Image 1 (spheres, rainbow, N blue to C red):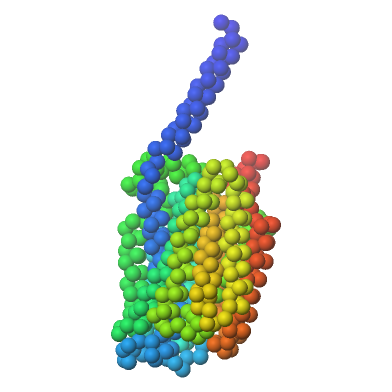
Image 2 (spheres, rainbow, N blue to C red):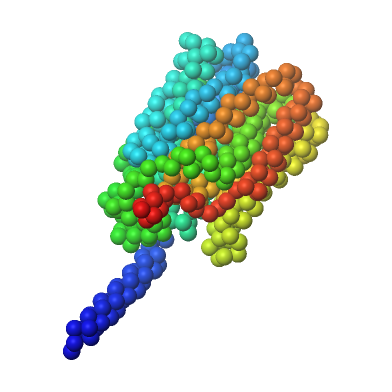
Length: 483
């Protein structure tokens, strides 16, 4: 055998061996996907995130219903419960949460990606729990301004939550389950809203009065912190009990490996990305509507529709119960459309985002011309306006993970930071527009402005949004390959 023949034989043998190994690797990947448990430790992590959002939204919402009881001496059956009818800055108290909330958004996702999200969540929830428990004492000792400061610090702490959760989902949620698992987490906010509205309303009307609602959520927050310390992990490779098949299923689905290096953030590419600006725009529309509804429905039902505190809490919770239930339907439908190849990821995101913005806008326009004594019609329209916004959880809410799995937390922090400014602005705008809380004509202006923002920002996302992974997702790798 000549040297040339021997070299050709060796090359062919090596090539054959390489192909066989590659084929085996592909088979293993398929096996891991099929062998991954239907219910696994990834679902335990998502459950922890779900309960986090339940409690976090409890901290947000208790004040929306609580402020009615805090300023109404007749709200509780116990005459000894302290009330503050002299407070004239209720909308400033409602907006104070967002003064702090927007501050950490720009760096919270980056910090979670760099240092891990678990301990950010534990520490910030601990601070919120303590401050929430102290709200009754703060109100008694320092008045409305003290409550504003406390709420601003609580908002500062909550500013870490969604960027951190988005980062954690980018580590734990396989792409095939992204909409479903993401919906479970993001829809926990509406679920927490339902619970908080009901609980706060019923407690406020009881002998124990509104302070008990703050004590309750403070205790729940402390319990969650203990649970997260014991059960929470930043990524599958850190979990001591996760099966090898589940770990490989998650990591192969996401393109992660245990040795994967931390990516530097491509700030210039992010700030020049058109789909990112479309994402910011649609979040602004959604959040303005969401926070207008959340902070003002109890007030609207109290002064315009003339419901008492018990009726108010029950009926105010209906829109968010609908939102929570519909969010699961929307999540499964959007995943099915993508996974079965019915529609592309981009088209699916745009369709569901449009449903979540345009249908509520139409309901708000009709609501603005509904008479105060048309109780059933008014409540149904509020249910539609809030409930159908659940489709956005399968639209913009998971879009950061579509655009850049490697920088999803950072992206959510940036876009959410800009968008959540509306949470601070909306109550102040409403305080300016609604000078007579019983005047339905002034509320008409509020609803029409909200509908306009929904429609305009939804159109922007439909034109410029994307569901594709952006080139800057792995910019470092591309630069190395070019060099």
